[in-house]
Length: 258
Image 1 (cartoon, one colour):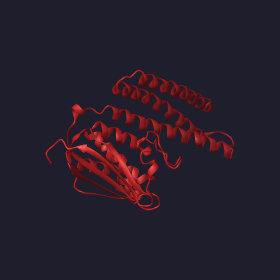
Image 2 (cartoon, one colour):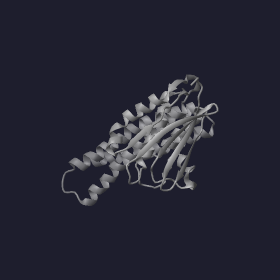
Image 3 (cartoon, rainbow, N blue to C red):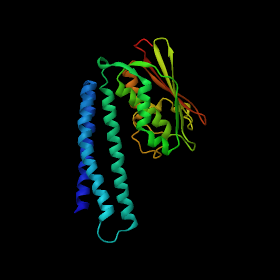
Image 4 (tube, rainbow, N blue to C red):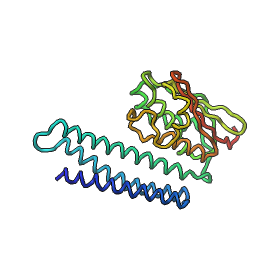
C-alpha cells in the first residue's frame, strides 16, 4: 500500500513539474513582469514542496517499516528515492529565494548597516562554521541604501559558498569594502581551491555546478546574489587563481553620507 502511494506521488510530481516548467516558459515568452513571474514561481514552489515532502516521508517509511525480507538493492533504490526527493526540496527552496530576489523593490530601500547584516549571517551560520573549523574575519563595513533582507542573502550566499567549496583545508573567509567614486566595492575572499578563468562567468548561471554531484545544493546561490546586487544598481564578479582561492566582488551605491 505504501509502495503504491509512493509510486503515485512520484508520477504526479513528474506531471506537475512538466506543467510548471511549461507555464513558466509561456509567462516569459509573453513578456510578463518580473513580479508576475515571481508570484507564479512562489505558488508553484509551495504546491511542489508539499507534494515532494510526501514522497520523501513515504520513502523513509518504506526504508524503516517495510515488512518481510529486503534485499540490498531494494534498500539502495529506496535510498535513492529519498535522496532525490531531498534534492528536489533543495531546488524548490532555491527557486523560492530566486523569486524573492525578483521582487526586490527599490522604493522600499533604506539605510542599512552591512556590518550588522554580516553579524546576523554569522550568528545564523555559527554551528555550520564551527563544525568545519571556519574562520571568518571582516573589516569595518559601511552603510548603504538597499533592502536589508536581500543584502543579507547576498552575504550569506557568499560566505556559505566559501565554506562549501573550501577544499581540504579549513575555510578562511575575509570580508572588506572600500569606497570608489559613488559606490562601495565589497570583497569576499576565501582560501578555497580556486576557479579556472574560463568558468569565472559561468559560475553565476542558475543551476551551475562546476563539479557535478560534489555538492547537493540547487546551484542558485551565486545567481541569486548577482540578481539582487544588480537590482540594487550594482554588479558582481569574481577573480581567482587555482590553488590560491577566490575573491567575489560586488558594488553597491552608497546612497547615504558615510
